[in-house]
Image (tube, one colour):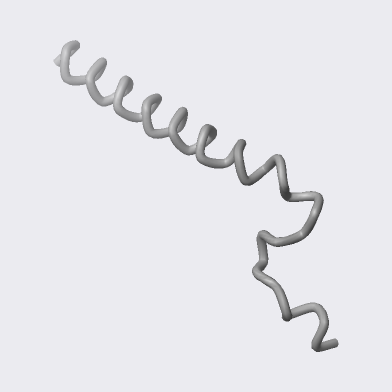
Length: 44
């Protein structure tokens, strides 16, 4: 039971690639939101 909590949540071996993918995904989401906001501002 205790061995499940002796490391960080993202510290599993299978999450190695997701550590690099997640910031990219979030940056794409933020850019998409900004583009939509600018698009609505231009159309109004």
